[in-house]
Image (cartoon, rainbow, N blue to C red; front, side, top):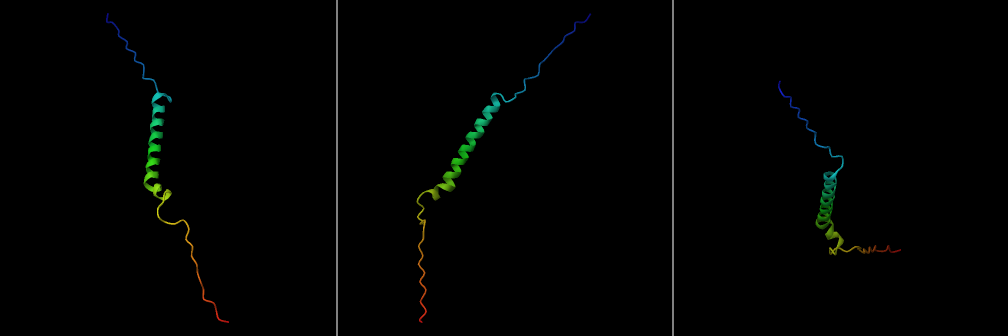
Amino acid sequence: MDDEVHVHQEPPPVSGGGGNSSTGWIVGLLVLIVVAILVWAVFLRDSAGDSGVPDEVNIEITVPGTGG
């Protein structure tokens, strides 16, 4: 008689929000923070400091009076 061999392999567990998922969120959050800092440094930093452009401009308009 032939011997019967039965091999049972269990499928790998499906991650349902385990360790790898939380690591992905942390990496994504760090990337978002770095991008926000770069955008601020490149585009918004010049307008936040002294750019040499005055905040207010006073304009005085004089209209010659009509002689009457």
